[in-house]
Amino acid sequence: MDDPNCVFCQIVAGRLPADILLQDQDLTVFRDHRPVASVHILVVPNKHIGSLNNLEPSDNDLIVKLINTARDVAHKVGIHKSGYRIVINTGPNAGQSVFHLHVHLLGGERLSFPMKFL
Ligand code: AMP
Image 1 (cartoon, rainbow, N blue to C red):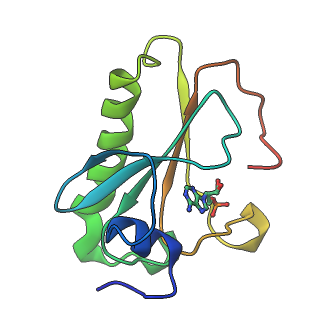
Image 2: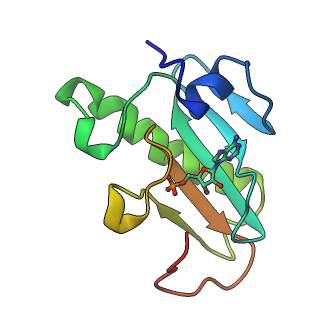
């Protein structure tokens, strides 16, 4: 289920340190180590899925849970009223750098659009 060469699989498995906010049987939530906004949190599935392009129909519940969790975490860290953005970079033109599906949760300040260097 996990890919030994994948940095997010290593975080999920506890082999690489991260600032983990939440973990359950399906997903792990941790702070991005190079934040591009005051709040920059990643929500990742525990199982290795390379990107949105690799989602299977059986992952439908999982993707809904990732998004619902991003919303719940926004609430927990107190940015639900000021506003936030969720981003899923997919492939080279979007600048995806870690090929393990993840949802960026960004907020805590006014966000520019588009964010070129995320
Ligand atoms: P993306 O460019 O959409 O693939 O986003 C990957 C994100 O993962 C970037 O914002 C990185 O800063 C972040 N990242 C990479 N390695 C780590 C790590 N070990 N701990 C926390 N965040 C990471």
